[in-house]
Length: 295
Ligand SMILES: NC(=O)c1ccc[n+]([C@@H]2O[C@H](COP(=O)([O-])OP(=O)(O)OC[C@H]3O[C@@H](n4cnc5c(N)ncnc54)[C@H](OP(=O)(O)O)[C@@H]3O)[C@@H](O)[C@H]2O)c1
Image 1 (tube, rainbow, N blue to C red):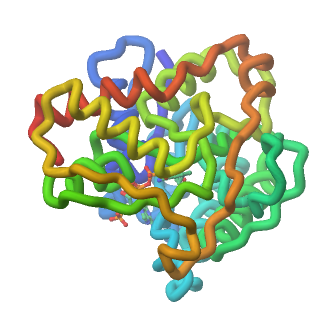
Image 2: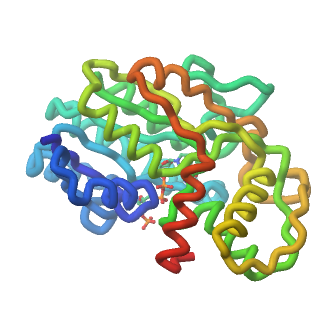
Image 3: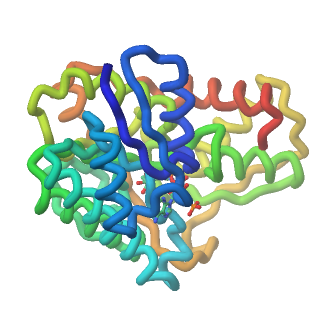
């Protein structure tokens, strides 16, 4: 039985871990939402680790408001850097491995190639900078860590692009979505499946890994796939036209990378796993949303 201490359990990744662990006999989870364990409180983090003595600390807590981070720099750094450093210190002091999640937004998105773990990060926005600072805290403090950089998360939980598209598509007859940012949409269900497969056999292969589902697509292309699948599953949509626009025509506070494609071959080779395509996860997510009426 592997014991996990999970932080941030009300986020989309945190809820996905909880849902997957429910009823499993090979894992036991000590789950903490933000009110129960604030990762910026170093004393509370240390106390929880000493009380639970987990085999792994799994950090699903983060500041994830990409545009808001431009005006909440201190808060985003406090959570994503200082909070992560608190977890790393407590884990290192108690010889507990830490599992952490980071983002494609550590890269500047230049060029057309896939980004590998050895490429130099250079974030374009403050959210990306705060996540990079968190990665570096772990790398400086811990010997035993797994950092999974992922991208464009979606799930039936919380807020994400899939749910926004379904909501807007039910209300509006036309939508405009940017087509000059390319990335790999990734479902939290697939992250959870892989992480739970990897943990029992990590066997010293600590380090930084990219974990995103194939294949790369633009936000506009992804929206088209979401509506096609929603139509197949009988969602009621008002949408008639889906327009492609450039990022310049959709002004937001934070600059996003144009090319966010993560190269995930290191993870697949190290742990002998295959990352499933996002299309099947999208169908599953829509089925869950449809059955729960959760949009
Ligand atoms: N979402 C994406 O598209 C995306 C893409 C790439 C990487 N990632 C990374 O993947 C991970 C999971 O993302 P997600 O989408 O599941 O995020 P999420 O839904 O925003 O969940 C994050 C959770 O952390 C909680 N939290 C915030 N501050 C906290 C604190 N000080 N102490 C404890 N908990 C705190 C939040 O609570 P409140 O909501 O109450 O503040 C929320 O429940 C993050 O590391 C994120 O950076 C996400």
